Image 1 (cartoon, rainbow, N blue to C red):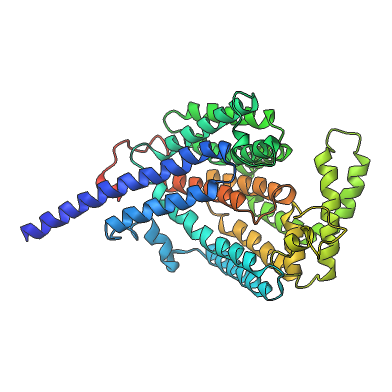
Image 2 (image 1 turned 30 degrees about the vertical axis):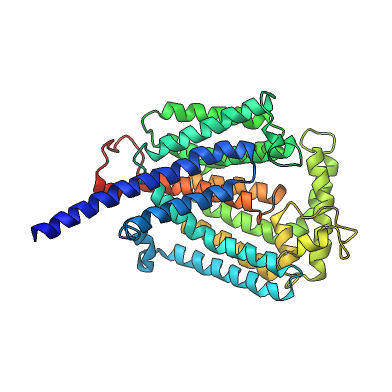
Length: 428
């Protein structure tokens, strides 16, 4: 009996130290190394997430996966613990994925479509898994790791914009403007978890405020109009949702309606742009997007019910034998028109249901979490409607990292009541 207890104790200590190392390594890779390298190589975030998952799988393999289903992951693996809103969200998401798979039957680019579906299948569980694991960091509290990464990335991007460095030459071949835009967008999304952590008043929360102000400076010094709009929406929605929690579901419903009605909104938007053409609101980016969206609207209305199949927008927008003369860009820079042209009204309706049930599933969160979830969703929605679309690897990875940070902060119970002492049993 004594020997068995001794073996169990030795095994527990082994599990603790091994998982401690690999969890800290994964968190540092994801939230310190990744934001910094993102400034240099603007499309590497998916690789950072993959590395973090591999590090954690190595750690769990070395411990025989004895702690793999430990809390809090075990709570989410038990479907009976899911509230009704989460179950409806899961069903809506599965329905959307099913329609994506169905559309491959008439897609001109089915192989690329399969890749998109695979990404959309694995991202939600990976986000939850990494959030749970990163909440158990021991080398530093998670909020400290996140703070260091955001601060370093913001500082490095400032140096880049002041021409002290030329990292853009190593990254995107398109030019520095694309690199600055993507990095400013990522920093804008990271402000959401910063706001969440500031409200919990952890030790050193003033540093978080300074990091947020530094990120704001970077965004407004950049040439990224998308990031500036995201910042305005994120902070504005956060303030409103914090004051009026009942507006949370209305925000998600409004986004759902916008996706469904967007093709019909293009003519009113066009008239509004003409009316405001002499103001600073209407920029070349705005006037340049409208013809692109109208071209894809023409494509969507040729098959409005089922669309032309996943990835059709890339096929008909790219140079080739079937390139359409009324489409001036390889993709619509708008996920509503992307889904309308690829999936038709059926696919758009199913995605609108995902947004609606996401609002329903998160409406009972604590006010501080609910307001941040709403704010980052609206900010991400704005960029997906005006900038990157939705099915781009680096952008999906950026949104996943924001979700990981919010989950890790929530599970970690960041706040002044948190003890600085971390026991081995708590870390496993």
